[in-house]
Each structure stands twice: as C-alpha cells, then as structure tokens.
Length: 240
Image (cartoon, rainbow, N blue to C red):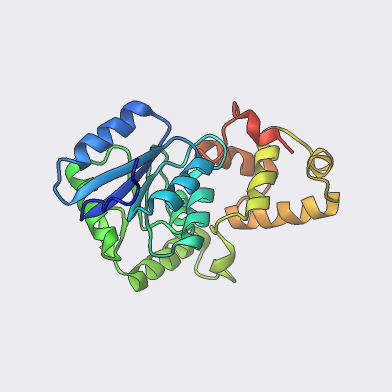
C-alpha cells in the first residue's frame, strides 16, 4: 500500500471505542457528510495513541471506559504531543465532575452517547474551529475557564482555597495507584508491586483524594468504577 497518497480534504476523524457496532454506527453517520471522513479505529488506549501518531487525525472521538489506559489518560498524552488535535469525549458516563475532569484532561467537548448524529456532526465541526462544547453550549477558552471555576465553586463553596487542586487529571502514576486501590490492594501491596516506598504511595493517595475531591480511598475507588476509569476485569491493571 502506498501511504504517500493524498488523503481527502476535510475533517479527519479517529474513532476510539471498544464496541464494534457503536464504532460502525459512528462511521456511517459521519461519512454521510462530504467534509468528514473516518481515517481509522482503535479499541484500546495504547493503540489509540499509536493510531493518533500514525494517522494524524483532526478529531478523536474518545470513549472513557477502555481496556488498559482509560480515555482521560489517552487524552492527556495525545494532547501533550499534539495540542492542536481536538478530542471529543463520547461516553455513557455523565456527571458534572466527570465533565470537569474531561475538559482539564484536554477534551474540547464532552458528549453523551445518546447525542444525535446531527448534533455530533456539528460538534465535530465546531471543535475543529477551536470551540469547546459543554452541556450543548459552544464556548471559547475564556468562557470554558469561567464555567469550570463557577462549577467548582458551586460544588465546593466560594471559599475553596485553590480550585486548581481539585477535579484535575491524575498523573500516570496516580492513575496506576488508583487502579490497584480499586482492585483492593493495600498501600503495602501497592508499594511492593511498584517497587516504591509505602510513604510514596501515601503521598500519591493524598494527591488523588484531593484531586478527586473525596475523603478516603473507598470513595476514590467507587468514583473510578462509577465513571468508567477502571475495569475490574482488566487484568492488565495488575501488572507490574
């Protein structure tokens, strides 16, 4: 195959979701439009990053609940490499805290999987032009930051000391530790798995609780499962 062929003009889209029927439905809906074409699929996090590098799409439609790396981890890494790429989180998991986490992980839009094809097509076109979509509203960057600040104040109170410490993406190490916590491992067991000290694990847990705005590790684990960040059946999360 000759990869030097010029691809069609318009908006190129990479679909990242591990449900084949859903992926196929997205492709069919998007490619009814002359200016949008799907350049590839991926069904898990690490492969999605590789495909994004290879295919250089303009937009990624990204699920959160993926095998291996979750969608937020994927979004952070992809946006670090390509700040211009627009990430549309398309998920069955929805609450306002989840939206904040998504936007701070680098998403340009957060959508329910119940979004209509016409709405999704409009969103794809909007994010390519630099807009952000939250709750069906089209925002510029300043408006998005104002929305995030106001929403955090509404949840935490107007006297929150530092909104930047709450509802922010977990680091790769913090996400790894959260996965172990969700699988029931103690700090000592996590330390042995990762070959780090128990104090280091405790320090990471303190940061995780603050970022998730929860009080204890049980709440953190429940949040991770409820929002699709971790899969209990994913054996890879227990690998060293």
